Length: 417
Image (cartoon, rainbow, N blue to C red; front, side):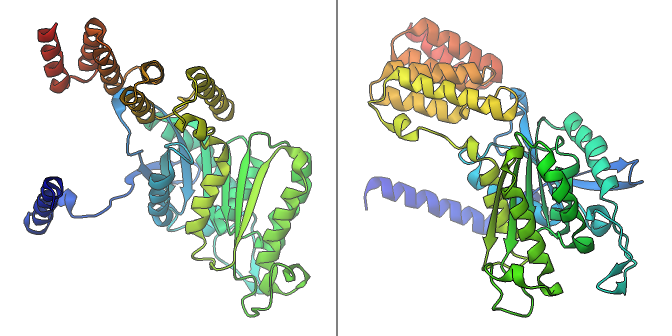
C-alpha cells in the first residue's frame, strides 16, 4: 500500500471509530434535518399557519445576498423531497433558492379547491371546500410579505402543488399570473367540479398574456382505475368517470400548447410508471429543470477549452449576465463565486495568468463582500510577484472576515517584503 493510501485509510478508520464510539451531540443524532419551523397569523383565514423554511447550504448572512424563492404546497410532506433535489441540482440546472413549505395538514381541500360543491359523484358532499380565493389572498397579501420581510428573498417566485395543490397552482396562474414567475402543477385535480377550472381556462388562456411565465405540468400513469388497456392514444375517447381526471389534464395541456401566442412557456410530461402518489418526486425534479431551462450554463465547451481566447471568455460571461438579468428582472452574478475563483486558480496552474486575473476580477466584481474572493486575488498577486497588491487584498479579506488565518498570512507576507 502506498503512503498516501495508508494515510487515507488511517484517516477513514479514525472517522469511522469516532462515529461508532463517540457520544453524538443532540443535534448530530439525525442524518438530515429539513426546514426550520415558522408560523404567522392570517387575518384572511382567521388562523395561525405553519411554514417550514430551508435556506441554501451556502447562505452567508454577512454577504447580504438575496435568493429566488420556491413555495411548495403540502410542505410538511414535500419539502424534504424539494430540498434534496435542490441540493443535487442547484447551481448548474437552477439557482440556489430559499424553499418555503406551506403546511396544509388540516384544510387542504378547503384551501386548494377552486369552486364550491355540495355533491360529488351523485352523493352529498359536506367537507369544507371551494375557498381557493381566500387561500390565494393569504399567500399574496400575508405570506409573501412576511417572507420578504423575514428572509433574504427576491421577487422571483415559483409555486409547486400536487393533486388539489396542482389545481390551486393552475388557478393561481389563470387568475393571478403576476404573483409567481414559475408554476409546477403535479398531477393536478382538474376534474374538480365537473372540470370547472378547465372550462374557465378555455376562455382565459387564448385572451391573456403570459409573457415571462413558465409552467410545467405532469400526469401520472394510471389513466383508468380499472382498465389497463386505456392509453394516451385512446383515453380521450373514453367517456366514463374513471378517466375524467386524466382527460381533464390532457385537455388542459392541449389548450396550453395550442395557444402559444399568449407567450406562456409550457411543458408537460407523462409518467407511465408512476401513480398519483409517487409522481411528485420526479415531477419536482423535472419541473424545476424545465422552468429554469434558461438558467443552465451555455458554451461550457469553450469555457473548458484552454485555447479559448480571453476576449471570447469575457463575451460569454457578459452574455450570461445579461441573460440572467432579462429572466430574473434584476442583476444577478453570472456564475457562483466558487466557480469563478476555481477557474482563476486553474488558469494560474496552467500558466495563463491573464485569464486567471480575469476570472478573479469577476469574482471581486460580483462578490465584493467575499473575503475568499479577495484572498484568491491575493494569491494571484503573490504568484505574479506583486507583493503590495497582495497585501492590500489580504488586508481586505481580514477586514471582511476577521479570520485569524488571513492575519497570519498577512504578517508572513510582510516579513517577506
